[in-house]
Structure formats: structure tokens, C-alpha cells
Image (cartoon, rainbow, N blue to C red; front, side, top):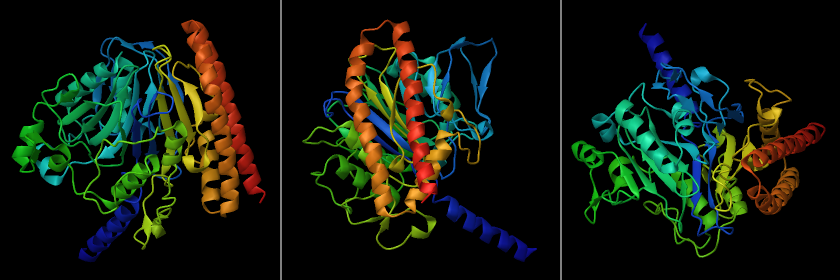
Length: 475
């Protein structure tokens, strides 16, 4: 019996070691509108977990809810009582609801955007004082119970805060809630502790899977929303660290800075600002970064694909690479199921919200495709819910192309990447004219126009990836 138990634990350790390659791998980016080349707020994220994990792109229609209707997260039992009405919103859900819906990122009909989430975890001492709530709010449900019920970004922050206060959080997370007027960055630390800041217009940030906020003025109610016990919990845990009379949130709540987070933040900062005065061995990097040059949408795409180009490190692209000398964990890793970038443009009406640029599977060898926020339809290639390869699924075809090219020579890789960038540059150039056109339309006309574009762009991009898959199979 004892030997069987020993064998069981050895197997468990091996499995956990393998799984640990895939967890806590997302990377987010924010660029303030005063730093972008076109004056738009740009933010986005690689949604990373594991290879071969299907995602879809859908629109949840506005609907009436009956008294007593609830949302239930099948993955942990979290229950949310539904308001009388749910607003329309776009989403990027998983295909196995019993393991969590993971609607992740999207626009609602009032132009509010949620980009959720980059997973994180408080240090062990904090968790003992304010542990995560087993059936509390998790990433798997967050977008589903916030985005359909708010009309502004600030309202979204307050709505989220109320859920955490009353029902608790099941895990740590960082995320963005934004609209045409404000962008909020939020860190959920422990079972009931969080801080949200109104993001400045003249900074940029790269944030992998840990906490990054330094000191904030908790009395600045206009620009900061925080849980009531954010200082008390840290003091009780014995982790409270203050600078200039204010709590330093990262030093008080975060665990040690892991190398897989360091490698991504370091390479991301240098990708967006090559002149940044940082070294790999710095204790930590400032969350709010400055840059002397404007940052373009293409720069953000390039950063989400980053594999240490020009930095001298090799990208860890398999379990066999982990721990090898010279290898580091990249932003553009093999565990990405989808990647998205939002642009909020002041010239567009609230109901349009802006544009989301979406790749299915890893963006390294998959194109970013533009979609307005007011759409009610997506191409059928985004709707397939199979958990194994399907030739009609955008995700599965793009995932297959990424798999093949990751194992191919640089010539094949560069040829397709060149096609992708040519496509993206064309779409970015077209977008400025489309924005002017759609801004002059009535809401009904604009939605029809956006839907037609969405179906056209989705089919066009899928056909491109499908053609590449066929070409690679014939090599």
C-alpha cells in the first residue's frame, strides 16, 4: 500500500510539472492614447493556456431575464442573480462550458470593453489572511457577469468591485475595463482585495502573470477604486510595505518575481521602447513606462508575437526547452489560443466602441482580423465547437498552421509571416477610411455595414489561412 501511494505521488508530481508549462502564461499590453500614432487607446492580450484548445468568436444577443434567473459557473459553482435585462456583447468563449465559459474579451452595445484576464496569484501570507473563495468569481465567469450589465467603464469597475466584496474572488487576476472616455486597469489580489486605477494617457505597460502596481493614492476617488481593507489585510499578513507614506501594492501582495514573467515583461518593454533603460537583472520593472517615440498598432502586434528577437535569448517552444541554458519563456509562445487587440477611437460613436483585431490560435503565424464593436454576426468558421481538429474551424486550421510552421525552416516561416503582415498593413490602411464612412451612418446603417465587413473579413482571413495549410501539407 505504501509503495502504491509513493508511486501515485510521483506520477502526480510529473503531471503537475508538465501542466505547469501551460498555466499562468497570458500577457497583456496597454498603450495610452497620447503615445499611439493615431491617438487611439490600444490594449490587448495573448490568451495563453495550452496548445489544441479551441476558442470561438460569437455575439450574445440582448435578452430579457425572468425573475429568479441565474448565471452559474459550472467550473466552480459561482452563482450570479441576473438583472432584468442582459445587453448584447461580443465574446471569445471556450467550447467546454462545464470547465468554464471564459467569454474573455469583447464589446457590449454601449461601447464598454472588457479584456479579461491575465491570471495572477497573491503571496502565501496574504492568502492565509484573505484566501480565495472556492465558489467566488473566477476568470471563467468574469466577462459573462460584468460586460452585459454595465453602460460605462467606471460602472463596470464598480460592478466588479461589488461582486468581489459580496461573493469574493476565486483567484487573482489583472484585467482592463474601458470605454470611449476612460480605461481602467484592475488588479484582483486575494479573496476580497483589489485596486483599480484610471490608466494615464501618456504611458504604456506590459503585464504578464503577476501584480505590478506600485504606490497609489487611495484617497484619489476619481482615479482609484480600491477595496476597504487593502492596507489592513497586508498589515495582518505581515507583508505591508509602504513608500512615501503609501502602500506599495506589488511589494505587499505579489509573490517573488518569476523568470517567466520577467522574460516577457523585459522583452515586451524593449519591443515597444527599444531605448528603455532596463536590464534583465533589474529587481522589477515599472508598470507605467514612458517612450520617446509613438507606438503603432503594428508595434503592438509585433510585441504580442515577440520571441526575443535581437535580445540573444532562445524562445522556449516546447516542454523539452524548459530549463535549458539560454532559453526563456516568450510572449509569442505556443500556448496561445487566441490573441486580440482593441483600439478605442474618439471619432467613433459609443455604440460602435472601436475595433478589435483578432487572431485565432497563436498570432505568430495567424493574421489579426479587424471587427467593429457593434457587430451582430461572425463568420461560421468561428462557430465550430469541436475539441479535436476540424477543417471548417478557424481555430483548428490556424492552430495546425502554427504547429507546422513552428517545426519548419525559417524560409517557410518568413514567407507566410510576410503574407500576414501585408494583409494586416492593408487592413490597417483601409480602416482609417472605413472609420470615416461608418461614423457618418445611423446606428442601424452602421450595424449593417459592420456585419457585412465582419463576414467578409472573417471568410477572407480564413481562406488565407486555409490556403496556407494546404500549401504546407503538400510540401
